Image (cartoon, rainbow, N blue to C red; front, side, top):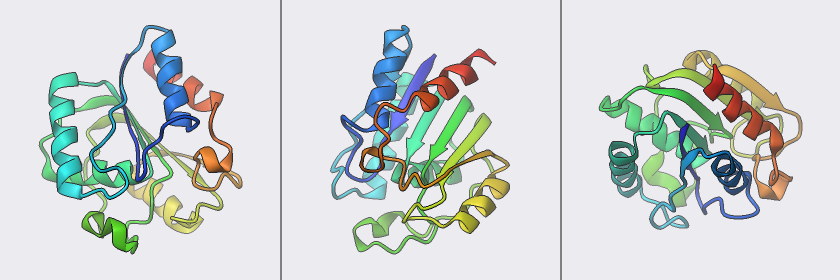
Length: 179
């Protein structure tokens, strides 16, 4: 497995589940790229897009795991239609497509891509995520033709909501690679 893990606004360092996932995949000899995106606390869409394009070209992952703003970034990349198809895509806790946070204004609004450049897509959301409501999450899953998993009361599915050592995501990612 060659897994690219993309964090959202502010990063996903320890004790976030993405850092846990990176370690767990590497322990089983998976090849992991878990880059720190530039200006993680004041991100700009064009800067992040250029950085991830270079990573995709050099690393050539078969699995991509996005959290939060990285989902929006992936959608923008897909709109450019310059992507190589990957095997598995995990979209975890995406924000609303019309997020209005001033700090993230270069990323929004974003349209739903016609193509996600992945053979298998899993969308994981929470019943009480402050950045997207359940109804929009359900419509997004349907529009993306993604397998949708909804976690009960998991907040933004990050370390603050108790998602550090998240064993289920490790099992999902490893299991998808075996299919």
